[in-house]
Image (tube, rainbow, N blue to C red; front, side, top):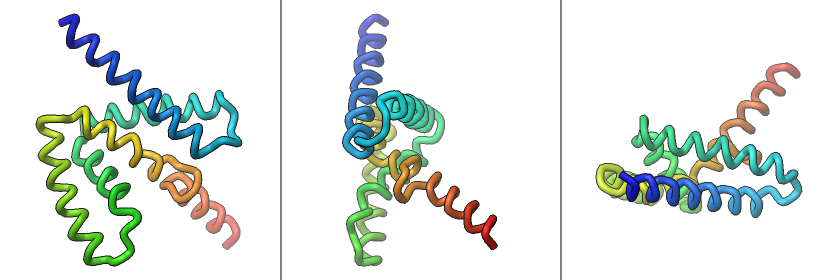
Length: 129
């Protein structure tokens, strides 16, 4: 039991540090409090998604991995292959999927092209129209 607790604490602290490093490198102009808050929110989102909806975490990770590919048919082929591999990993090595999900979560919560930015842009355009 103690070993399992040590493992979970180590995993959470590693993911927390990785998320804070990622947010600090992507958003250097934001305050430390903002980056820490975003880190905690993203950590809870990644862990809850891994526990309840691992398929969603697999899809976010696939989107992040295939983001640089420009050709549509290659992107789909690589996405299906990566999705199958990550889906298999989600049954046996969920920790690895969580670490990969750390990089993919910013596509959802990010300022630049993430879901929340697109939602804010849509609301602004709806008010103008």
